[in-house]
Length: 167
Image 1: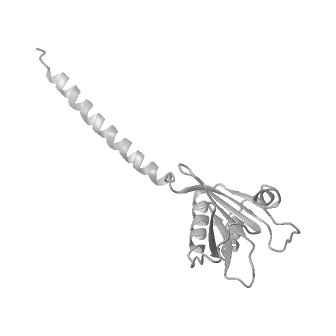
Image 2 (image 1 turned 180 degrees about the vertical axis):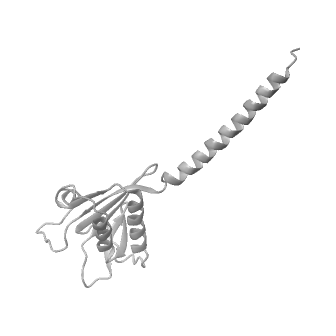
Image 3 (image 1 turned 45 degrees about the vertical axis):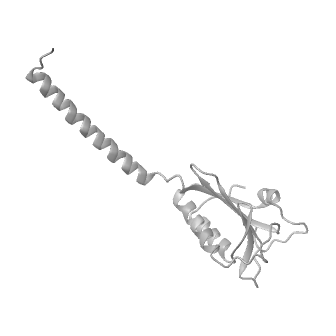
């Protein structure tokens, strides 16, 4: 049976206090890091592609054609990406008349919201019509209606953010 000395007990006590302090600091560091890192369900970036409303085409604009000829912006700021997602969600808050929902339409805009730990959300939006109150769109492939002014708001956020056009 080993006999502990006062020195050993004091050393063990100091070690225990040190370990508790390290644990507390580590937990506070992790908690503060959680405030600066986006949550798994928070957007981390976004891509915005659109064709100016004054441009008309002889053929129907498809998603691959939009990617080739549209104005493309990469939004690399998480706060701005979250703002774009909020605008899209707010624009969706209109009655979804199933008679007006369409899977295919003339595409003019696309917003893709990227997340750290979950699948991207892709919103493909049709042309804006001056006499309409909504725009035809698909949200991850599902037909939806969006308020007619959503793309003007999104373009404004991108322009105020100073994001450079990639193409």
